Image 1 (cartoon, rainbow, N blue to C red):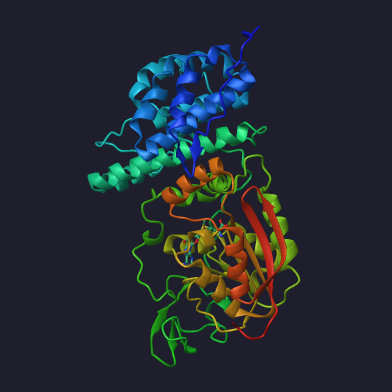
Image 2: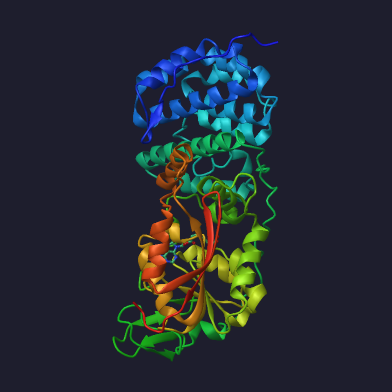
Length: 484
Ligand SMILES: C[S@@+](CC[C@H](N)C(=O)[O-])C[C@H]1O[C@@H](n2cnc3c(N)ncnc32)[C@H](O)[C@@H]1O
């Protein structure tokens, strides 16, 4: 039986406007010594709050608060022995203990491998680990190091890449990995306080990675259809001079020899648009990183939006539109394939700015017209598209309002725009984790009003809006023939 008393504190405001308040010190002092006398279901909330305050203190450089929380480590380790029996207790203690790399040995003695599921123990171990500058392991931390099982060749390629970076960059990337992982663990613990988590053990998400198919020699017809395309430099019309496409006005030349037409107007150095990521990023993007990203940024922890929901949404909302459809910022192609299944390959154009993404897409979907180009300057004529899908990408763009305007410009009247992106959380705790991920992964979220205004400014009228957590899927129609 638990002791009869519970912690009774005057109402304390411990967190405000994104940071801990002075009263948080009093909360920590009152809480740490008495944790063992609190019922486990309440204790898990207190332990979460301690973890959250330590995390906030570390980000804000508040060493006093952080050290005060750290001084309760023995109590947290004692709590681990009993509280790890529930999911919420286990993931909360993982989050709290992961904050103290100075105490790595002490923590791992009490929380040895096997005392947590493998992918969770790997998270804890990595958060507590020290960088080995001689053999840095970078970009393979979140959502769990256990999700990155590389072949010997991949491992060698990854090591070569990491060893080629300068020491400052290595330290920066290591710290960024730790920060991203800790935010993942924190958001996960917070979600577990409200209900069971969807299983995020690597390998359980049913997203088969695209398999390379034989490459076609010729390009699919839409890829070089000069009736649709326009010059990204001067917006002039284009003519074909195989294997190039040439602008009739400014004489700029665009190459299609890589197997896709490069209408970016920007030189590419291979990994440029996904720079800073391990070369293995592409191999794990769809199966491991994307679902994890949706969990934190979209608060999608209980499986509110699964891959099949995304597929169904796109299929339902894009099917009625005849004519060419653009997958804007298509990535590696998994969701382009959904459009192809719903509409047939002859109607789909896939575009992305990152060369590695376009190349991957070409290799898994050889029948789909692929372009390299910028969403902020879509190399297509006004009103030529029946639909544009911008799926899980607007948050990565440097000028999202411009991209939405460009989508509106290319749509014919009655054309459909589908969007999956993220709204800014109004829950301050979730917002903290969401913003940590935004900073680490160079993305953003949108206040709902901003998003709606962006669409209205592009002449797009919202017809359907589905929000789950902070993930939003919406459909809009370009109603007016004139572009605002
Ligand atoms: C998170 S991925 C989304 C890929 C895919 N649509 C999906 O649902 O998984 C975002 C993609 O946006 C691309 N991207 C970012 N900014 C872009 C821009 N200005 N123009 C075109 N693509 C862009 C990136 O290269 C990346 O492939």
